[in-house]
Each structure stands twice: as structure tokens, then as C-alpha cells.
Length: 226
Length: 233
Image 1 (spheres, chains in turn yellow, purple):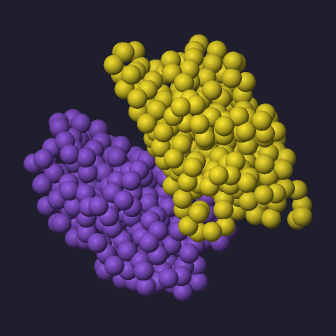
Image 2 (cartoon, chains in turn yellow, green; image 1 turned 180 degrees about the horizontal axis):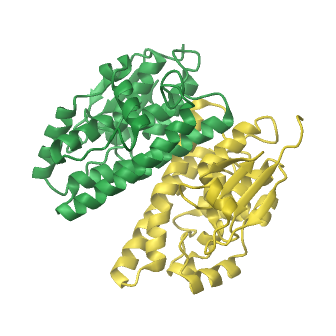
Image 3 (cartoon, helix red, strand yellow; image 1 turned 180 degrees about the vertical axis):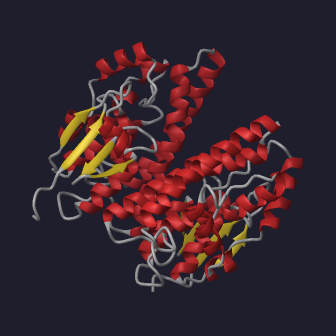
């Protein structure tokens, strides 16, 4: 190893995007320094490392910052290609499918979830819930397609899509209390329900995901903007 | 050669995301069958190939569909890694920087300029134009950082970020023609202004990018049909 390999993660305990990065680092067996950020009083380090968005997560590797959770995940997989398991599949087509679903999660799941959580009007809330459940149903299909009967989107082991969705798990588990609806149920999304149990049992999940009760409390009091 | 005979691209002539993919395929030196889609009357093939989003571009390689322009570009670079030019740099940090800015372009530039086109009032239009200029100011910074004095974001020749930004240029020109917005002010964003000209002058751009007037005609058709969703990724 050429000198010290230094990894620093700027994050907030509640952020699902930060959880994603923690999951990846843990799965790869990488040690890092975690620095909790105060987003109401942003540190110089955060502002210089992410001047464009001023958000977390930021991964700083030997002084060089990488921003945006999905970009960070791919970076970790590439910079540490020979360390620990691969997060993305090796086959180009399977990589494209994985990237498609991660993009889908980011583009389609979060917005209706936020609407369901923050909407003041009943109609708006109902619409948010409807859209969120439709997205979850599509993800059930994605899990069937990607896993091919195996435990994870990544197959036998956790992969890129698992991490992307897994980072959101504490929020998903808090959805009933926060949005008034269960995102997963045995009738419509049996595969996802089983996947949630499996994923939350992982060591990485125990380290990376915030406590659901604490998160729900926090979200309620802050009407959290994730 | 990875089944090169069986490559199909479903597209729409003025979609910047389709143009992006065509640029990538050009860089890889790959030939394909292009199939123009009518987005107001979607084909069976499109609906079957992209059931989730029902959008273009869709690359169909050996019968297997790949959707989302940036996903397709990365796929092309990986599956035809021995062919043509590399689209991505080799260094992981440089790749991360390119991915970061490409995502930024799609999140911030595209909605801003489409917003200019769709704006119902002068005020709303001015607001969106302001947003677009902020984005371009950031991209000017990005260019300085990434190019390190060379002609393109990727260095000596076009790469991922050049394609990600460059596919939008003909729309920016169309909007300039329609609404008089100046996007590339040599005073404010000199590097980007010079890059935009250079990019438009590449053989790849000349072959693949439609004329700005084609976009103008399309925009006017849309305005007549105000309210239709045209954002094809």
C-alpha cells in the first residue's frame, strides 16, 4: 500500500443517502472516519468539499472529495476493485440493468414518498401514496427479474441495487407511521417483504441504518427534508 | 465483436438524450439501425422495450433493451471497450467527477432550458433563464477543473462529460433563436463558449446533431399542443 489510504465520510445520521455509502464501505470491509455534519451550520470542510450542492454524503479519499451517493457507490466499487466483494455485476448488460434500477429508485420513489409524508391536503397525500405504491410494485417486479430466485437484487450477495434501496430502509420501515400506509405487504410485494427481513439482518445494515423509532421521531418533529 | 450486427436504437430526432447516445455510438465506431419513434403514438416495440418509462432512447443489443441515456453510454463504453475511442477516463476519481457533472446537467440544465420553452409568462421565462445561467456558470468552473487547459472536458478529445453537456447545445441554440436568451457569453463563460464551438465543429457532432431549426419547428408544434409531456430521456 503506497502510504496511508485515508477515507473520510461527511454525513448526517438520518440521511438515507449517507446510509448507502456506509453500507458500501462496510460491505467492502473498508475503514473510514465518519464526521457528523450540522446542516444548519455547515462546516468549512463540507462547503469546500461540495461547493455545488453543499450536501451530504461526501466521501473524501486521500483529500479528494466525491459527491452524490450513487457516484460515491460506483467510485468505491472502482477504486477498491480488488478489495472485498464487487458491488456491481461484471457483465455489461447486468451492470446496465442495475444502473437503470438505481436511477429508477432515485427518480421515482423519493418524490411521491415526500408528498405522502409532507402533504397537507388529503387529496395530495392520497395521490402521493398511490404513486409510491405503484413504484414499489414495479420494484417488486425488478427484484424478481434481478434476483432470479436468489436472496438479493445482486443475486447471492448484496449488490448495487440492494445498497441503493437498502439505504432507504429505515425510512421505508417508518413509512406506515410517517405516511399512513405500509409500503410492503404480503399480498402485493412478498419478495420485497422477504428482502427487507434479509437485508436488515445483515451486519452492514445494523451499522449503517439509523434506528427506525429514533428516525420516525426525528422526522415528525422536523418534517424532515431528505 | 459483441454481436455487432444486431444493434437497434429507438429514438426521436430532437431528443438531446437520443443525440447523446448517437454520439457515444459514433465514438465507439459502432453501426446500428436507427428507428424513429412517434412519441404521441408509441410503438409496440418501444412499449415492450421500455415498459417502465416508455421513453427514448432505447438501445436494443442482441434483442436485449438498455434504457436511460447515461446508462446506455456507459454500457456502450463497457461492452465495446476494445472498439473506437474510450468514452470514460481510466482513473476512478476522474470517472466520479465526470459522473457527478453529468448527473448535474440532467438534474439542472435540462429542466431549466425546457422551462424557458414552456414558460407561460415573461417573468417565468426570465426566472428559468436565470437558473440556466447559474448552471452554465458552474459548468464553466467544471470545465476549467476537468479540462486542465485542454480543448475538451475529457482532455484532448471528447469524453463522457462532453457528450453529457454537448447533446444539449442544439436546443440551447434553438431557444436562443426563439427567445433571445444568450447562454454562452464570452465575457461570463469564455471557456464554455469556446468549447461549445469546438464541440459543434467535431466530425461526430456534424454527423449526429440535428440543426437547431429542427428543434425550433418541434418546439413550435409543441407550443400549439401546450401541456404535452415531451421530456424524452
